Amino acid sequence: MTSKTDNNIIKEALDKLCAHPLFVNSSVYTRLLTYLVEKAIQKEDIKEYTIGADLFGKNYLSDKNDGTVRTYMYKLRKKLAAYYADQTIENEIIFEIKKGQYNLEFITKEKFKKDKFSPTIQILLKYIKSVNFLFLFAILLFFGIKAYLNQPPAMWGNFFKSSSNNLVVMSDHYVLMAKNQYGEEHATIYGKINNGADFLKFKKEHPDRSIKTTDFTLLSKMAPYSIYTLSEWFLGMNTHFKLQLESQLTLNEIKQHNIIFIGQHKTMNISSSFFLKDSKMFSIYKDGFKYEFEGQEKIYNTKHESKGKVEYAMVSFVSISPEKEAIYFVSNNDIGVMATLRNFTNKDWLKTFGSKLPNKKNKFNALFEVSGLQRTDMSCKLVALEILDK
Image (cartoon, rainbow, N blue to C red; front, side):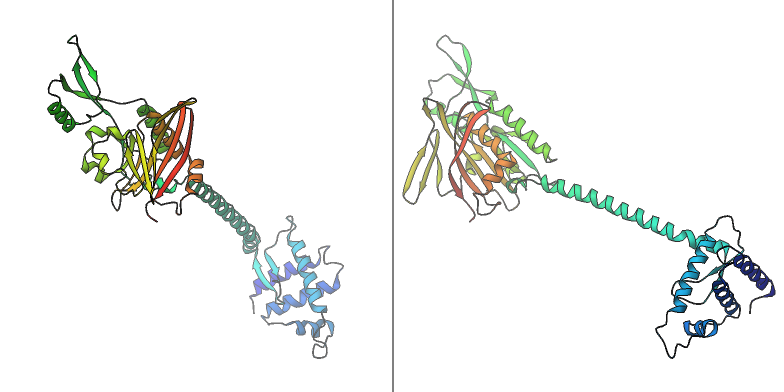
């Protein structure tokens, strides 16, 4: 039993409720509500058949599917909800019948307000969480797509790792000082001399030549163009490279770096030991390359035609150790190097070229025919391809 004070509060609330326009003319609902309040005070557990028998004379033993009580309870809940929705009504105690139940409960107005707004808050919190989740998902999706679209082509993958050590090697010409017939000294280049050993050999063979070494070398016009192209390519992948001249390159540097060689094969020193070393088809021949395979032999050498000069360039993608790779862009003329480098730093072009490989990560030697007079007006056609790791 509840206390006498509680009973007075409950009776006052019940009288006030039954006098409200929602109930004053509904004897069925005031009677039902009063019945439920009395049972609640007595803490008596009631069932559907109890209400049916006590108030409506229903015998659920004979008709278990009778929905009279359920209908009245449903409408009573709606009336109570409408009554307590009126903000002008002050209630010290609230009558609550939870959905699916028949027992009435007494709750304080503080708990009622908390319970009333909790679902809204919960829904709002769920909404906020859903929005945050969708926002986070959208961000992850955006960066995922961006990362996928920005991922490097397969042959450049090892160069664009965050931990990669990359070295761009620029071929440079060995420069000598020679005297002319007037005794004047001038800088000159000898095709057969590209290092100290070559110089000593040449001097031994031609002791009468008045030549001596200098402390500088010469780079051709492909050097600035190629560095600019590579800088944009590497910056676009958020990575970098160091720079070295072929004349100063050491074996230790080759072992410690991924190598990108840019230049002419006639200026190679230590790089000549690695370029085309695994090829079974290609070799250097005069100003170009020789192709030999299954009894066939072809010479690809620089030639001059009515429409301009045609030259050949080799792009060689090889492993120089289990962890390091190298890409050689080699031609004896500037335009061949610039044309092939331009293509191999173009994602769309690389996709087309990659379709010619059995596997996108295959190592290869690729020979290209290049023609054109201006840097921006060049054709570059693949004429022979050797897959190194079938």
